[in-house]
Amino acid sequence: MLNVAMLSKWHVHAADYARRLQNHGNVKITAVWDEQPERGSEWAAQLGADFEADLDNLLKREDVDGVVVDAPTSMHADVMVAAAQAGKHIFTEKAMALTVEECDRISAAVRKADVKFCISFPALTRPHQLFAKQLIDDHILGDITLLRIRNGHDGALNNWLPEYWYDEKQTGGGAMMDLGCHPMYIASMLLGKPKRITSMFHYFTHRAVEDNAQCSIEFISNAVALVETSLVTFKTPSALEIYGTEGTLMISDDSVRVISKKLDLPFSGWISPNQLPKEQPLPIIQWADALLHNKPMPFGLEQGTKLTELLEAAYTAHKENRTVEFK
Image (cartoon, rainbow, N blue to C red):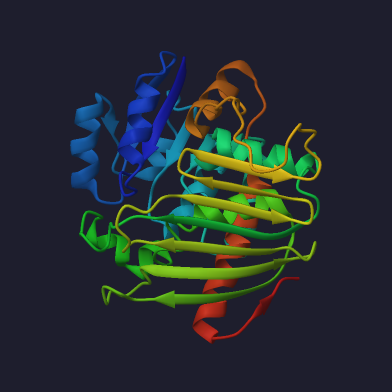
C-alpha cells in the first residue's frame, strides 16, 4: 500500500488527483495540508484523512510515503524542497516552478535525498501526441519546419475558474502559465532544444494576467513552433499540426490525417490511420505504479525544468517586449 499526502487543494486538478488515487486500489490518502487551513480541513474530512496545519509536521509522518503538490505555483520550490528533504516522493502539478533557478533547487534536493519525482504532463500519454512523436522519430515527415499547437477554453470568459487563478503572485502568469504548459512541453518533446522565443499576450477580460496568448519558438533544428492558448475562446478544438520537408500531420480533436512521400501507398493523398499508439495511464497513476512496483518514473526533473525554461523566457519576452535567446 502506498500512503500519500495531498499538499493543498489550490489547483483545480487537485480533487481529480485525489479521486484517481483513491480509486487506484493500492493507494491510501492519509493526510492533507493546505496553505488555507479551513479549506484543507474540510477536504481532509471529505477524503477520510487527517488534516495537518503544519507542513513540517505532516512531512515527519511515517504514514506518508509520497506527496501530491497542488499548492500555488509560487510555493512549489519551498514545498518540494521540504518534501524531498523529508524523504518523501513527489508528484507535482505543472509548472514545476516559476524559474529555472527554483527548478534547480528542487532538482538538487530530490537528487540528494534520492526520492522519486514526477510532473503532470498528461498530453504526453495520449495517442495523438504519441503518434506525432513516432512519425518524427521515424522521419516520416522529413525535417520538421513548422509545428502549430492550439489549446484553449472559455474559463476566464465565462468565469468558471477560481478568481485566484488570476493572481500573478500565486500563479506566476495567466493563460500561458496554465493551459499553455501543454503545448509548451509537447513542443519541447517533439522539437528538442529551443533557440529563441517571442511572445504576444493579451488581456481580453482586463484581469491582472493574460487570458489570450501566443508564443513563437525557434529551435536549434531550425524548426519553428507556434504555441497558442486562451481562456477566452468558445468550444476550442485542440489542434496539432506538424509540417515537414517530406510530409504533414494534421490533428484536430479526433481527426487525424497524414501525408508523406515516404508512405508506400497504391495511391497518393491524405490518409487517416486506422490504429494509433495505445493510450498510456495518466501521470498520477504512472507515478503511483512506479513507486509501488519499482517501474520507470515518467516525466522527471529534466522535463519539468525544460518547461519552466520555456515559460520563464516567454514571460520575459512579453514583459520586456523583445526576443529572448536561450543559453
